[in-house]
Amino acid sequence: MIATAPPATTRLLVSRRAGLCAVTAVAVLAAALRILPALARGGLTSGFWYDEAVYFFGSQQLWTGTFPYRDFQFVHPPGMLVALGPSAGLSYLIGDVAAMAVTKIVFMLLASITAGLVAYLLLDYGIPAALVGGGLYATWSGAIWSDTSILRQTLLNLGVVMALILLRRRRRRFGWAGIVLGLALTVKLWGLVAIVMKRPGFRSVVRRSRARSSVGECRTLRLRLGCDNRVPRGAVWCSTS
Image 1 (cartoon, rainbow, N blue to C red):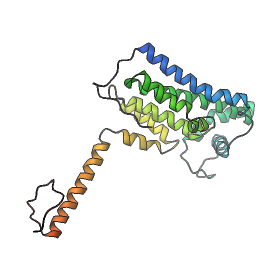
Image 2: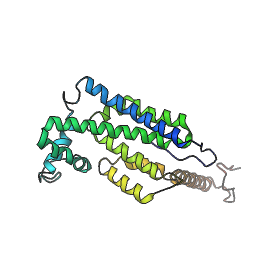
Image 3: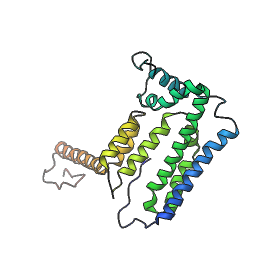
Image 4: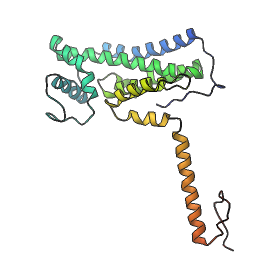
């Protein structure tokens, strides 16, 4: 999910009321598509994925003094286990199944916030762009599937979108963006890819690297063919005659 702020000449003026309505509509749609079907088919307590159980019971172990990597195997960053701490504590009051059901609802609400933030991120491009972009996240089956489970993607998506908003061109907050991104990376490391590609100089660095590679290849070709080294720098071929 990569987004960049448009140039000042292409930014569209959107009223605060219209923008708020668009963001709210997307968030409500995302919440409805995630929570209502789960309630209707009893999906909150009917069963849990393997990964959900690993994260949840791993968090219980963590908060009872049994640490991952040392006392039990865990192949992911520890942020998910820490984030599920309140749910682990709640399980001792209402039971594991009920606590996991509550956690699922919380994750669905977090995903709804993410959908609204995607719409907010696109407001500079106009209301239609915000509705389409946020609506795509709200209605995409892959996002709905992961957001209705206790999976790391939900927290990662929220953290990356928040970091992108903090890095908007008009009012950048590098410190806060770094904190949010750092927390997101303690859950899943793939969030780093989005921020690296969002970095303003990333594409220009790639272009310069390719250009240097091309120039080096041309110089090597001229030396091998015995060409005059005074051939213009931009030349890609030279004659040996």
